[in-house]
Amino acid sequence: MRAKVVIAGVGHTAFGKLPARSTVSMNTEAVRHALADAGVDKAEVDGLFVKFPTSSFEMMYAQKLAEAMGMVPRIGGVWDQGGAANASMIGFAVMAIEAGQCEIAVVCFADNPKTGSRNAYEKAWGDDGIHGWFGTPCGYAMIAQRHMAQWGTRAQDLGEIAVACRLHGADNPNAQLRLPLTLDEYMASRMIVEPLRRDDCCLVSDGGAAIVLMSAERAKKRQINKPVPILGFGQGQTSWDVALRPDMTSTAASVSAKTAFKMAGLTPVDIDVAQIYDCFTIAALMTLEDYGFFGKGEGGHFFRNEGIQTGDALPVNTSGGLLSETGMPGLQLVIEGVRQMRGESASQVNNAETCIVSNQGGIMHTHSTLILGQTL
Image 1 (cartoon, rainbow, N blue to C red):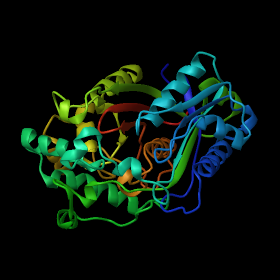
Image 2: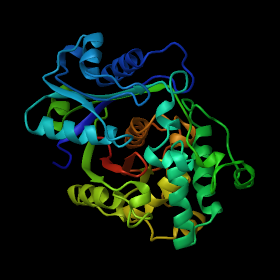
Image 3: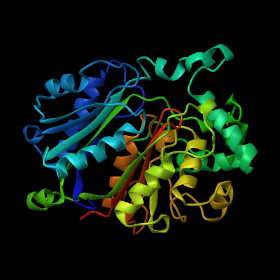
Image 4: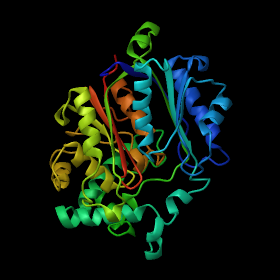
């Protein structure tokens, strides 16, 4: 299926604090922008793949959204893999298009935890709540502690990721947080859950995003402007909760990436730019390890000697990622990958021909990978 399906259009809302905006209204706005970018009428859309809002789950949400947008899709629905769902839905849409189940698909997501409910992020995690395990950061902090003990990772290594993301976000006019960060400022930021500091943790954001997919053949016939081919995709799943995992420093990203690289016919050395899910800096570091860009415990050396800023060996999160552009999980990373492949990013990587995108859900429970190619 390599390059058989393309991303024909992208769109999003503003990111940040959007009071009085419902998830339906934000999804509708993002989809409208994506359809306009692709030059597609909503009546032509026959596939609608939706990640339900994390902060306010409701039944039949995809049908509610389709009704609000005036669409009657043949195929679609709502998926839940946490933050991995967006990239996974793109893979499902690709397979549906290839199987003839739909011709033009929309993938979209919107949420409003900034001005609505953030209970999904603050709640107790099962029975471990009696031990004080409340909120998402605790699980990632446990993983980070283990990684530091097992592989010698330092706070400064995590800080390099935060600094790069914040630097790129400062150049992004769409970013929620446009404030550069130095490593000294990172080290001085307060602890949230040791060893994770404030600047290790992603933003909480309202916002919506959407993409339009169709076959490469259809895009050519329609003379779509700058369609971006999907070269590979894959998924990985972890069934164990954090405290029960036999290995806390390896993730399903390795399985997901292996599938995507095989489909694309590429290896890590062929990747020019990466958009890596950075809900917490430790997640980004471990994803880069499991994708094969460097070995376990070698992240700090790679960051300091090869580099992850624009102009370095492997630019990472060139729009600012979840740490700077928006904490709205997943789809904004795909959109920035599309910008890079079109040559339209605010932090454009020179001569970029390939981009890898990671999405991750839960506390490293689910993982999904996309590899994009240069516009056709």
